[in-house]
Length: 456
Image (cartoon, rainbow, N blue to C red; front, side, top):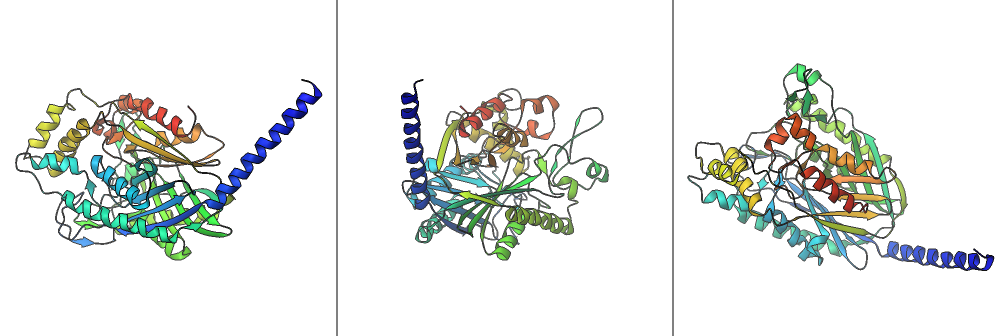
């Protein structure tokens, strides 16, 4: 290359760099954020998961907490709900009403649940199927979710009056001490032993934590030195004791609200890929154990916030991709099997719902994709994934972006149930037994993760 050609190329690169930098600075000035919160607790007497007895006590209000991001061109919503699950059209209704409320597209709204087991399992499609069955059991009626989403949408719309500029984004992470542990404990012969969320077997509790992601990750939006909102990401099944007629936001809600009260900064908690992760090693089903778990999670979140390092907030890059998961169609998982379970009045509510109506509802929508999304700002990524995904998917996302900060929220549309690795189907255990999608789903979801991270 001649000296003159090199000089032209150098000058051109300076112009392009300046244009990009100016655009970035302009976008940063336009960036705004607002926060919203809404109580979405069902009324007393409602039959909610996991006891399905009439709810007798509200120990903690169930909250939907979220943010609206505005870059001057589009608005984006991230929302976390203190529910066990949102599935199918119920999940879509939450997203659509939030989109309409803030004036954006459905594809720009991500709604995730935290998966507490003292909260609703919301699937209006399954409920309507069960209503047609022989002697249907009582469930929380879809009309409640319609009313609750109206209130949630109103809260999000009102937050637009409080949109305020932010110019920095911060990231922090620390290891959490003695909270999460694997549910899949391997015996000496290689077989999988189940260590449930609450475990009273001292031998099982003495076994190693197992394969988990030990880090809580925190993303902070700030203006100058003032943090405006913090988003926390941690992967586990977040229930301590359950099965009684009580509403509670449990360990993550206790830690979240305590940190918000102490720091005077809006805090949101998202559950990561905790499909095969529980509290079991550290939880003997006592109130004392819950108190200690909440304290240790609180300490982890607080330390992660304190470790935050800031960079200038850059343009928002939002990606979406459709996800088509192949259903299991062999014996025990066919439509006929699911229909038989739903019609069996001798089965428990849980058996008729999970093994019957919810499987049928998923099969009815299997040709309709689940929309996944991600938000990127510079080298910070937030992935919004579906269902009870195993922790390997979260770790996979982090491995393929080793130099970036990748936070993962699972439990979006939970209609597929458990999403497992192909290896888990070979090993056995609870998760692949309860999954309604085929082993090929691992590669399908991994491909979607790569697309969301801009890798293909």
